[in-house]
Length: 118
Figure (tube, one colour):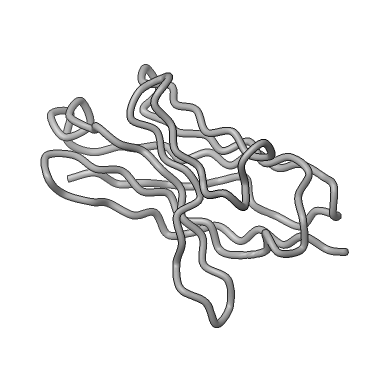
């Protein structure tokens, strides 16, 4: 089992930046078997959508809407994934969820609210 705890959300003005963090804890075997870390978001009235995911330091995937503004990274020693969000826009407002995959199972964090004011 893997337990995910997110932090770093909040209220920011358009054009500002935020950094989200998500730390994994739980079974050492499951933690060491994590092969994918990522972030999704869900805005009110919309479906949850992929923001970015990372499977290795150089293997990343971004939604078109966040390319060149957001950067995903991971620190395997800390079992943590980060999402650096720059040039934030009001349309980035959503609950952001961390996700990790290990041994065929997908785990989700509780979500952290990001609100971008215009």
